[in-house]
Image (cartoon, rainbow, N blue to C red; front, side, top):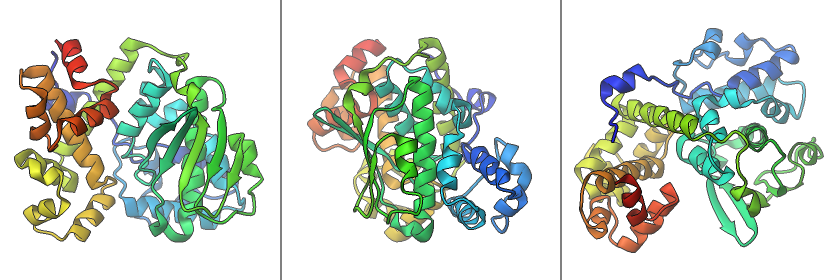
Length: 345
């Protein structure tokens, strides 16, 4: 099995995803007469960063850009319009990985697992209830007045991405929003092709579950594998680079109990639980996302390179019950551990 060494990772550098999608926002504001320098004003970012694949962007800077865009735009539906401008290439290697997936389900699950650096606001989860698929996002009330703008931009962006991956509109049924109806609420039906419900307690996107099994027109196993490896390399590079995500990962590798107790992890790192969550949020990740990724990588490593029983692997990656580990592994990979091990062999 091919292993990615640190040197190989550096040679296959992938953009850190910080600026992914923002060129569409800048283009929309430019059409409204807003200069890029004004969009980035008082954010610590430079206009040239929009074309810099390696320009870092903190969560605070990301929110500052959205706040500027909301304030400077002359169109109330600017966020929806900006998102509609997105193309597969605007999502970088992640977009091409989704488009080359075998099915829409594969692509969507890949995107959920790997695109958190670009869209930490969303923290999306997918669940299926009968013939209904529900893409839910974190409520994110902490963003206050800028929440509607951010939600509209990323939902519209994803809608564009999904349409380009499928080459047909997503069969949406309902859009649920946890903010009041905006002045342009009628635009939602035009953009998403479904009714919108405002003032709810959750952020959800309901669509026909049958589309999950639809084959992606651009499916290509070789392209997808190359993209997948580059995304994994980028993720590995982020951890190697340090920061709080790297510290959390290191603590979890040293002590599996840190994977199930954020209090124990915070104590090990010498900070309060609240401070830990805040510092991870500033880096654009969550405790759950870092732990999930660490568990997944460890589990795959054990299954691929050892003969440890599944029950022992479950314990080593922080699960007290093998049943819960099997459920999590299926969520991560779409396979049960035993089937994955056979395929790896």
